[in-house]
Length: 190
Image 1 (tube, rainbow, N blue to C red):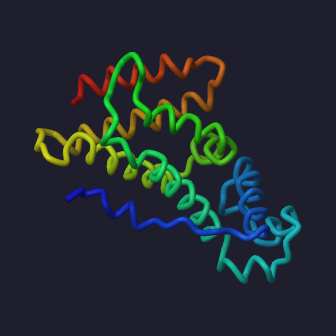
Image 2: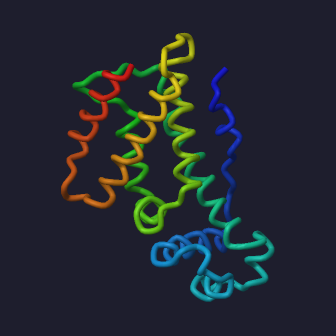
């Protein structure tokens, strides 16, 4: 059984218009401030949402931030659910990286905030667990390999580091070259 199966317990939650506005505003504020310095009052004022509405959904700002994290992780997990059926080819690439790049571009504000502006360790750890989950299913489900956990740690760390570097330096990174580099590293590790 996949030792990273626990990450699939994360469920996506649907959001009202007010919740979506609170999430968007929290990401904007967190981009410039640490989460511990963002008050419910400030968040609600910027989001133009009543504090009573905020408290009908959340107990505190951290709970809202965790909902944002979980929704992103859930979507990343669904995005790459079919990795087992896809061949790894240096010419065509590996859909995990292309899919993830497109998703990051669509949610650039949140990823930039959580990876660059105010690194979110909990989000990064959840994302690593999701990557390990998919790659364990792809490469280790029916084969026992030496240093399996170390290999998965390297893969997940390398992927998140590469995506973070790309967010920091968008004009210095060619996505196709990045994909090729990660693919070659994968071939060496596996």
